[in-house]
Length: 136
Picture 1 (cartoon, helix red, strand yellow):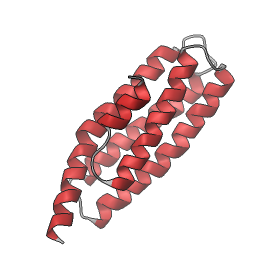
Picture 2 (picture 1 turned 180 degrees about the vertical axis):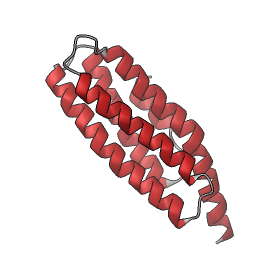
Picture 3 (picture 1 turned 45 degrees about the vertical axis):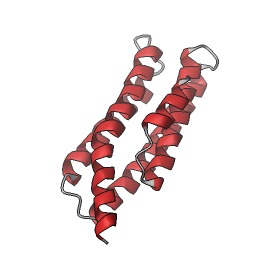
Picture 4 (picture 1 turned 90 degrees about the vertical axis):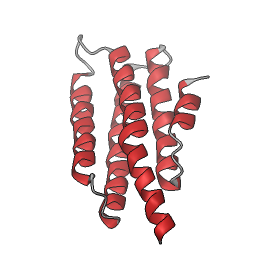
């Protein structure tokens, strides 16, 4: 099973908006994997990181709006996790041309972060959302 298939299965939480956006993360992570495997140039990696940053901003804003609208009690903690990833992505974009930039480390970081965040903080959020829906 490739990383996209794994992430798509692991990131299905039962909240359609979140699931669709997590599938987009799977696609972007697979693109990073293609770069790691030597199938793209570093110029393309810059494009992928910029797309990842742009998509992350959109995704995080969507989740954060959902949390605010539904009075999610762990909103602040969850938002901090989002901010931390954005800092790391900005650093990676800055460092991409430097000799110390390691595509394997970047790939591992992003795929691990998305999996851990989705299976942790986002799973908690989805359970809260499902509970809210059943009470409405």
